Structures are given as C-alpha cells and as structure tokens.
Length: 519
Image (cartoon, rainbow, N blue to C red; front, side):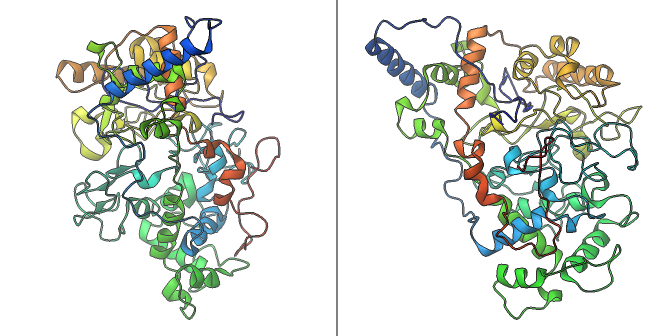
C-alpha cells in the first residue's frame, strides 16, 4: 500500500501505447517545478488552467468518477456479508486447516498479500501474512520459493468487474455488458466448464463463481493431504459437510462448530437445518457478499470529476493530461486501455512483464505462463493478461500477473521500453527466494509475441518517451486514484473481525506481520 507496509509496485499489465501506468506510480513532483512560487495567486491561476486542460482531455468520455453507480452492492454490516467475513477468515475451509481466503487477500495488505507471489498451504507460520511468510521446508514440492504461480489480485472493488476475473479471465461472464456484473442470462464460464460454455453451478455473479476455486487449488487452500486426489466437486462436498457438521468428510469434522447458528442468521432462516443452509453454494454466496462490499472509490479523482478543481495537485493534473491525451497530442494514451471510471477495458494485452516464479506449467521447463492462451488456445493470446484496474493501485502492489515489479520506477521503465527493461531487470527488487532461473528466456518469448502482435496490427503497448518530470506527474495522477480508506486501518476495520465477533470454529486467522504485530 502507499504506507510503510508497501514498497509500491504492482505492475498492472496493460495495453496500448504507453499505458505505462499499468500500476500506480509513486512520485514526488517534477524537477522543473519552481522552487518558490512568487505568490499564491499565480500558482492558483496555473492550477485552474491545468484543471481546464484536464477537463478538455476527458471531454466526451462520459466519466462520472464512480464505477459503483447504478450497481446494487451489499453492505458489510448486512448479516450475509458478516457471515461471509467469518468464512473468509477461517482456516476451516483449508483442506489441511492451515490456510484461508484471507491468507492471500487481507484488507490491510491492499486486498492482496503484499507479496510478489503467494504462499498458501504449508507455510511456516499459518497466521503470518505478507513479507516473511515462507513455505515450510517439509511442505510438498518445497524448493525454497513461493508456491503460488501468480500474484494475488486485490479483492478491493471486485464487484466492479463485469467480464472477467483472474489474470487469464478463466471466470468469464458470457454476456457481460458495461455496468452489469453477472451472467446477463447467458451464464458464467468457469474452469469447471469447457471454454465458451456456461457452468450451471457458477452462481449469479462473478464473485460467487470465483469463490468456488481457491479451495480447489492444492497450493492455495486444498493442500496435498486431506483432499489429495479429489476432484473439485468432491472437495466442495467435503467442505460443506465439514462446516455444516454433518456427514463424514475427509480430514474429519471441526473440533468446535457453531456455524449453523451463523448461517441461520446470515440467510434469515432460524429453523433451517445444516443440510439445508450450510451448502457450498451458500458458502460462496456469503463470501461473495463480503468481497463485493469492499467498495473503495472515494478518490481525489472522483471529487475532481464531480467538479472540484482543487481535488488534484498541480502535478496530478499534468499527469492526468498525459494519461488521457493521445501521443499525437503530447500524451501517453494510457486511457486507451485503462478506460472508463474503473480504469480498465477488461481486455487482454501482451505487455511482457518479466516471468518469475514457478509458472503455470507452460514451456519446455514448465515454468512459463502463457496467460490468456491457456483459455482460448489462440496464438495472439499467448502471454496476454487482463488489463488491471488502476483504482487503488498504489495500495495494491506488487504489480504484474506475477508481481515481478516491486519498484514503481522499474515498472514505468518497463512500459517505456519493455525490451530494455527486461535486459536490465533488477533482480534485487524481488525477494531472494523467488524463482527466476529461466526469467530471461521465458520473458523474451513474451517480448517476441509483443513484437509479432505489433507487426500484425494488433493493439499493443507502444514505446513512448517520457521525461523524469512527466513520470513523476503521471505518478501523482495515479496516486489520486486511491481511496484514503484503503490506507487507514481504522477505516478498514469493518472488514476485519475483532475479538468481539463470534469465532464459530476457533480457526480464525489472527493475522500478524513478520514482526509479530497484528494486522
């Protein structure tokens, strides 16, 4: 995040021309700014002028500043969202009782885990989240590095996604339209269904559909012990019986179980039985309400769009012009892909972020990640990843589908000149245990794909030259896309259980950082 817990980086892989902003850049003003303004009045006049230029740049884009408008979203204080929060924080949903949804998605860590790549199951200290979380030496497939092959996306503003979830879009609304998240009558495709075909068990929203899958990933929550060898349906069946305290699930029932009363309250059915209420469909429904309640859109940019010319700093106003203006007009054309009030076209682009980590099993050594190609099988989709939203991006690093950038400046350089950035990649920005043996080889293939796409006329990231001052201005604009709540522990407290909340199975993650402080 933008506080002392974040080094700022999460490379949002983006898009065309310089979309150099795939992430949020932390800057400190332009080096050409006057050291001492002559008076307050001239400075104010300059600011007003710059505000007018920004409004000219966004004219005709129909921006309202708030992507949540027109959506029906749950309140964190609703009974179902409260139930979802408790489920989100319990290790009872982990196959081996050592991981939870929050393990990789804690609100204080930007709705992610502040790591380039996550460690789900088999951690040294299950309740230690973020930097310092390590794979236990006795854990399955131990190699010293993180176990999950992709960066944990933030859960913040999850409800704003209309088309795709996951970096490769493997949860997909088949009839999505702008401003409407869900199946739109055509259904939602998931990894449980063939490409292009709706999953009849996906539920009615992308959040519900997505919540069905972390528990089925061996590295994230399923583990390699209790549920080893089970298919997705069997895993979910065992979990609903475990939480519901019925049947004979593998791994046994919880030592203490007061979940039925929680489900009766959450689903407003005081007489409902465990078999009726504690189903996996209801588990994911409640978790989705919790996630979809994480709406953080009250940014300085929103205030500016709504009419407050002074909501942005002078530097941010100059950065906004770079963001929205085309290259021909002296800008960077970032908005061509980071478009709309949610700052994403919800499409897939090859940006060639350095490939680190274990990979997804692709390539000769199995440590490459072919991105969207894994879903579509189309050559043009090889190494393409979903355009990230830029809302709160300063607080949701590291950046990139694999968190390869933990330095804002390095991310900017990458988008300015991907080939040069990869050739000069600074390995010291990632934790020393992160796997990067074949990084150059695998990433060069992505760079070659980017070049081929450009030659074929496919909308792609372009190289744009920016000065140091322009980079800082752009960074200041991106900082203005952050809701102050996501950097305020007290404000985030509504989404984090405290000692006064019931703990239905005594298996809640009491998250600590590497220094032993509670998050």
